[in-house]
Image (cartoon, rainbow, N blue to C red; front, side, top):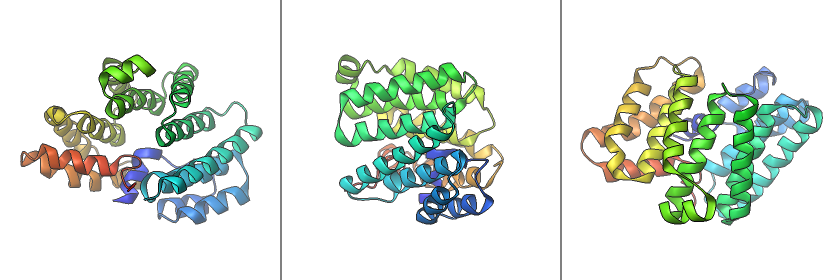
Length: 252
């Protein structure tokens, strides 16, 4: 299941990193992928190194302090990539992700707002980037799921209608990508069990899409874990499973 969660977070490995480091990443050898990525020291390989650290932090760590240290290490990798390629939207987007994860772990409203600004800047730079749109959507929805609709709106300016609109935009920008549908579905379940019908529809759509690479193929595991629960009317069970598959769902 961990490898499926990797797909949720990363969507695709850095295309210009070496085949060896990408293979380590896709095989779930994240420490090795991070080490090799840093050794290669190209912008793409450094991004892959940071993504590997984020993957462990989000999906393979049960201790919040260790997760935070890994997020910090990942941001250092993204900064190193930006020092070599200042205009890399991929590095900027991943740095925003690291800031958002730190905000979640430390409960920092200031860093949460900073992450949102950076996600929105990524959309402005690349309006056709589906991941950027999904990141903005996830920020709004995740804030509401964490704080509740009133506090999230009052303190952070998070809005559910923006989340839903931007998730739909992400699907439209990359309609053949199953990952955004699964992330959308799991986020809906995280918000409310009343969203179960829409979540189930999204998971069925994702399951019908042929995988375009090895990472997308792994989405089938997440769908297989959650969709049967929804089909049997167990929305609460599906919600609990989806939450375990979202970032930091493994923290004690």
